[in-house]
Length: 316
Image 1 (cartoon, rainbow, N blue to C red):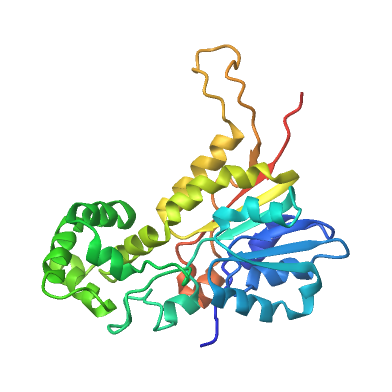
Image 2 (image 1 turned 60 degrees about the vertical axis):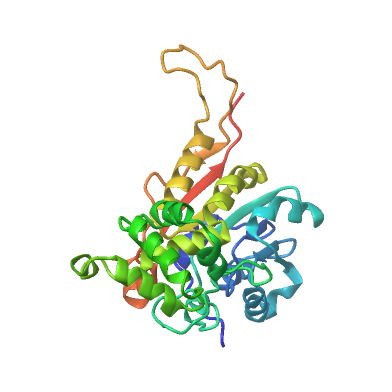
């Protein structure tokens, strides 16, 4: 199956990276290589691009897409949480720009073997971003306690019927283990009242999001990695992150703000005594959103938000 992925807010992202021809850039979620290709096109002699992805299919697709720029591109199969040590292995301690596009690719959603989509009933419950990982979505659904399932669906899916869905999953798996997307769809739909199912889009969306986030540790990886990535930016280096739901966006917004103004002194203190120093500035006070044209071309970009941080050393 061909690896397809619409590069969300491509022009806006490239513009905000402020690419220098001789700079070093990292695409931490390279996917099909759409953003990577546009970065590579703008690099000249001395420029370098590091493409990281945990999906081997994505790495293969990205290599094919960047075939005319391989002299300045390095590919790394890894989760972006390992970005800093992987760059160190390559002899890189500072970069001029970092991009994270946190969305699920169209290839992952549309590939019937990957189990990301609730739109088909007979897909295996996989949902692994990294297919070398041994744990699948089915393992989580079949082995987690009812309380853990409830908290996962409530917190990561923001699903108000989380308790009922968790209870149904435990009841159904006692008869037969969860194996396919149809099994999970049945548990979700049977747990949500008919009136509630008629509004707000597909009733399965929130639970699928929750399982995928839990399985791939999406929020914890993001939360734990951002400060380290900001630290390796050169002066005036840009950090661009595209999110697709409120949980991710909240983490990005709060972390960018904290790095801009890390002071923890009580507001009544006349001067800062905590010693925490700003690492830069938030470029996007409000997130950049897709244009109407993009929304018409790709409905999956509807919830996307782009936020940008710029590294700045404070004046002494």
